[in-house]
View 1: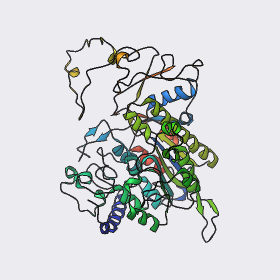
View 2: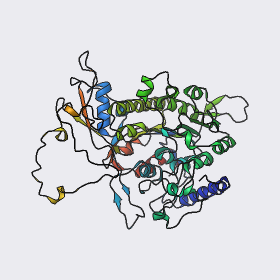
View 3: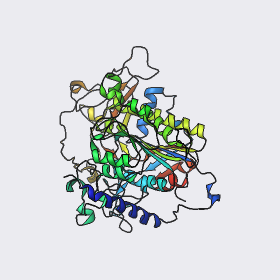
View 4: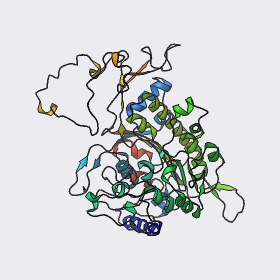
Length: 506
């Protein structure tokens, strides 16, 4: 059913009061401190998330596009380390802490944006359902300009993690349903419809003003009432929500103002490879992640001069906090689509280069690049080899009598495929869409004439299962406070590191 709009005024009050109450309870956290604490402060923060991207993705992309002796832009950042990513079970918390080794994007977003562990699917609430304030909310409260850019629906877990509070990530809109939004296992009883935790993410985003600049996909999650709410706040809406007319890259290039809302697809944005292969398609009019990022930085780093009627601008005195997500890395990794995964990593890394170029010009910007979790990482294989799973007669498990090796894992709504391909190029199973490896790609040092998909290609890849894993993920950073990210840390620590750099928290 569609949520009654009369309930939304109360919703706005609920989230404001909850965030304020939680903020005052954060140990050691304050929005005011002495001027002496401003030494080494970052004026701006650009936080880039390569959803699902891990070390083997980075290595494979480097080999693919720059060769063994090359580097991706993210690999040139001064500080480098690793981040642990585990989630927790519902209703878990001190002293009954129960970890879940594998996170989803929602609990990972909550950890980074809120500094608390929560259960998979939760956004902006802890594992017992209590609201916690987001880094973007705190930055906005502290006077920073804010932006959120994604190639996913803007209501999806990672971007929504900075702008909303829901019990279940599927509660996105435009319709409200108990099944999508309520979670009785957490709350014990259904929450009233004016509680922000069961308010669709799109309704929250359109009304709470958390982000000044919002660019991405997901137009189909919003409706005419959302457009009215955005324009009432002075937001320039590109395209038309009411008519479900998506914005275009031309609309983005022409956009001006302090608050801009632009969605370029009714769902997720189109993968770069498809746009490149179909330049005359409607989807080819969508901006790329680098293009959205350049525009977001332009808009956020400028502010209209007070009292002037002209559109003259100058650099913002306070600074900005911008989150950017390369979401399609994860979505194509779930599909074990190596070609599109690599292209999306390249687009994401080109975005990192834009952020770093701005940071170098500005001289006072913290840039952080990290995934939220691993998804279907690559096995980078020796050329010409094949895996045990592809072998006609896999080696026997000499420790087969060990009970630890005797589990029978299950996968909901799926079944094990008994017909596996054999041989180094998939043998008789090469035409079977369920068989994904090896994928082979030309690298810069390959001889002329070598093509993707050929046995002669220099990069051979196969996959981990097409799901998330619990592996630690890499992190790269530069600018004020980046040295704290060297070594290994946990994802909840990112909240404090990111928040302290611009003194959003002290």
